[in-house]
Image 1 (cartoon, rainbow, N blue to C red):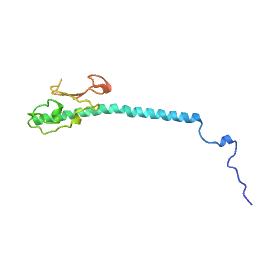
Image 2 (image 1 turned 135 degrees about the horizontal axis):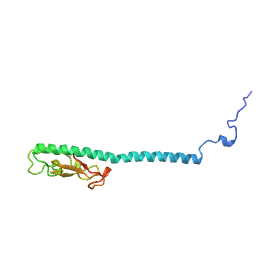
Image 3 (image 1 turned 45 degrees about the vertical axis):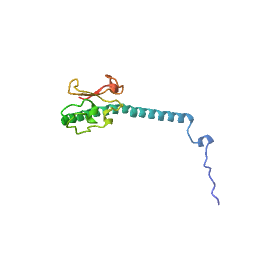
Image 4 (image 1 turned 180 degrees about the vertical axis):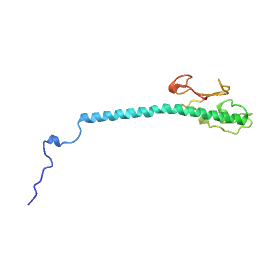
Length: 145
């Protein structure tokens, strides 16, 4: 005796249909867009902060290289370029002390070098994102201290 077949579909045809309504789909897309936008601002906003921290580290590293140059030659360099190529008349030069690419800040602007400095033997300065003296936040000057 055959077993009676049961219908897989019971109830009204509308209850059987699966899927999402248009409003549900729009709501999900808007929520995902909001999350992505929030994450992007956090990630991309961190780029400026990372450049400032990198510039601070590079200024300190360049200052150490200037001190090494001074220890070897007995004088301060006339420019940061003297760390890369030996200047004429610099006896005791054991460089290169730096690479050409190290003489530019994270915004691809050359570091400013002056000897004598304002309150120390020399100054090394990055003018920050705006590339102008002064400023605040990511536009603030980054100096060797």
